[in-house]
Length: 226
Image 1 (cartoon, rainbow, N blue to C red):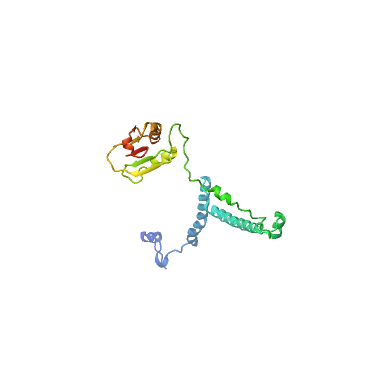
Image 2 (cartoon, rainbow, N blue to C red):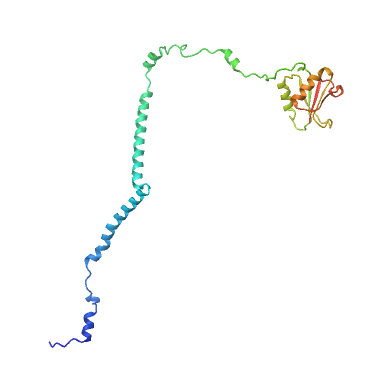
């Protein structure tokens, strides 16, 4: 075959890359490189994250989960052991009870106390109202008429309770719809009840109190609560 000298077309042919059926085969190493990179980089990256977390004072979640599982299992085993020992301790020995107590279970008088009927009576609360110390010259058994002029049912209940605590025993409460007096007032029937009227006014904190037999009627003391 006759050879010709190289020209510019021959140089271009040598410089071009073969394609299609004439493409050069790829090296197997190029296929394995990505898998090798994953196998090497992933463990290294995981180890680095764990080290970083430990240096920052953070808890490794995998180690913490294992420790919590172990602690829970240990707690359950301890509870089971305690329950078994408690059942064993709680088992009663009838013969031992008789020996330790030194009593005969057939005798009901050993374990049963005789009830004293007077105990129940002594424990019943007293219905008596606790009263203050009596004031000399005050007639606590004087008839007291307490008028509720507030227009509210039970409006004089507090005043009645105050007088009973002070020691007054003869109190009558009635509703009052009159217009006078316009304010709280206390009237006593005679001068002999002066100290009593004064004491009532002090207990109820009422400024006006005076002798007026016409306002008291059949009572010794009349009180108007407005």
